[in-house]
Image 1 (cartoon, rainbow, N blue to C red):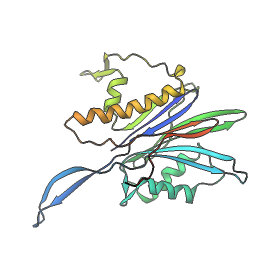
Image 2 (image 1 turned 180 degrees about the vertical axis):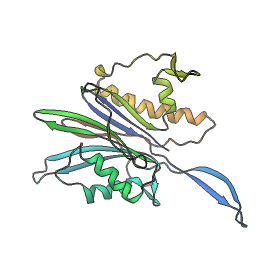
Image 3 (image 1 turned 60 degrees about the vertical axis):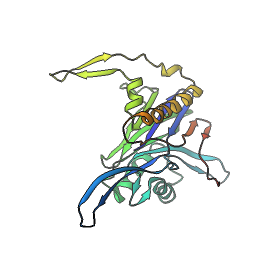
Image 4 (image 1 turned 135 degrees about the horizontal axis):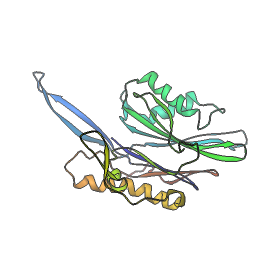
Length: 255
């Protein structure tokens, strides 16, 4: 499991993720009988936020697109990060942009792992006439969800907010209203949530919120009797019309 969040405000896009890779191990007795499944932590150093970029011959960026992965991480015994790198090298061209990558990404993974319970956020800007327009997409491999755009209203106007995926119950419970369903299937708000005025949120506040969402989840599950599926360092990538920047990113190190 994972927790990834994409926060989109007027100044830019923030993508943050944890670093934990957990797995479920099923062992057997010498005579072949199955034992209880064990959920264990395999690593706290896995990348789940990636920057896909291309530059022209003058070293000017052609596109800078953020991608996040969540859900099942080991596909064919190899991390999603390795597959993303291969995807970038084999499938992307100078003609691609944030609107073409989601379809290519899902098709690439569905060809290799059609039943994988793995999803993605894809985010970036596309120049339309003289305006840099933000695009935020939600995609999923096994559900064959391609290009579900999250940052537009029903009337086509831009919407600002945050999209999170993975182990999302804690941040959802803090931010969203509590809704109950009656016997007839009707929804009723039991506890309203104070609104966040996303249109007025600054880029720095979007960074702080994204880190808060993941840090709060990590801290909460530490005390709860549940699998510790979110943890490790928090990586944060920012994308604006002017370019991209890693606010924090784990690096290789020695002792």
